[in-house]
Amino acid sequence: MSIQFRVRDFRYPISIVLLRLLFERSQSWSIEDHAEYQRRLLRCVITQAYHQVPYYQDLFRTLRLRPADIRTIRDLQKLPLLPKATVRTHFHQLQAKNKNLYHARMYQTSGTSGAPVRFLLDKPANVLEFVHYWSHWSWAGYRLGKRFAELTSHYFLQNDELAKQPWRSQRSFGRLLLNSLSLCPDGVEELARALRRHRPSFLKGLASPLYFFALFLKEKKIEDITLRGVFSTGEVLLSSQRKLIEEVFHTKVYDSYGHMERTVAISECPSGRLHINPEYGVLELVDHSPLSVASDCGHRSVNVCAARVVGTSLHNRSMPLLRYEVGDLVEVEEPSPQCSCGRSMPSVRRIIGRQEDVVTTPDGRVISSLFIVFNQVAGISLGQVVQEAPDRLSVRVVPSSAYTSQSESDLYGYLRRFLGPAMHVDVEYMSAEALRRRTVGKFRTIISAVPAPYAAVIQTNQRT
Image 1 (tube, rainbow, N blue to C red):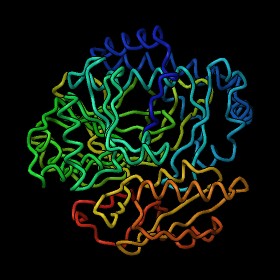
Image 2 (cartoon, rainbow, N blue to C red):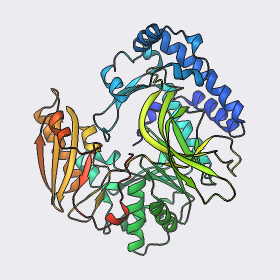
Image 3 (tube, rainbow, N blue to C red):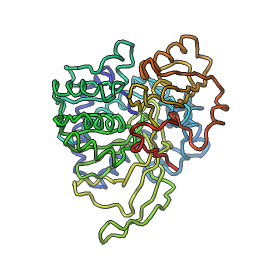
Image 4 (tube, helix red, strand yellow):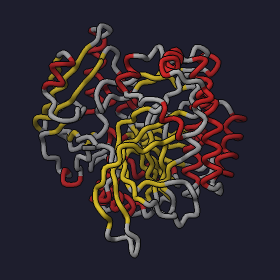
């Protein structure tokens, strides 16, 4: 799940323009040029961490390291990996003492892989995110100011009135917001009318809402929605989903991978390769595990491996994360092929990641991002949703000391906005230990025991 852009976070026009110009030039850089750029930014980040971040001051002292000892990407291996549990435990110690210079604000992950992680993002990190999206979208022909649509629920969860609206136009930004809470066979025609009226060239969204949108359009025989590009992000995009989305919208899907903490990014080019973005952050691939030997690569003998993603911030000064364990896997080819798009950026074969189950409401809507409610309600340390029957949900909540009666009211309110009045909801409070005892394997926020009408294409894509 990506952080929603807010205008006040991106009012840095000079910084945005300068970084955008750099991103334009970097498209033609050589591998050596990318490496030198990373080394230059890495030295700045290491110096900031050493002098301003208490956690790293202690770590460097313990390891008897100084900034001069880490000058290259390979030198990063002198530092241990940074697990999410450590970020939770040492949240305050990982903050830079001069964080206010960078207009830092606190965010947290959705907790789809367990307890949420809190972190700071600042002006340089927000400028990076804006320019990264701008740059990637330009690969599909996007130019700043062109109209685009976004399939989302974040905006519509602000209150009950908005939750009922199928779409909202933000003309000053050229953006049409489509309410993913309205995704159902009967509601898709209103969304199609909004697309015809506003005529966006591009559509952005999570993979599964995009898929269901395309599926419902096809079922209603709506064939006149043509776009120049669809941008999928935030979830693993299955090949079956890609095929249908491209068929319905008559265009190519451009997939991307990132995470809220903003240490790494991967973007799909027009040739279909998933390129690692060196300007964004340092992506290390560790613990390679052979999967197979590819036999469909012509005359090349290619080893296919799974590798864990480890990221290092290059732009976030308020809370730099060094060798952060993101928690996902990617497939890589060894040796990596040269891409026909001409970009020298390294690439991966496939994002493995993980994909949550979906919840199907009694009125036929498909909800793929119900986990958001745990991020919206104060005082929830951990949560899980189990759909036990077509009209019944069990919501398991681990409350913190900040959880109040108002929190409970907010929880039910958000659930109603997502699910409608016909779904029966049971909320069960328990300790984190009790919740984890009910979990077999990796913790999942959404578990459905109900075969949805479209369950055949919603495969759980969990990393092993």
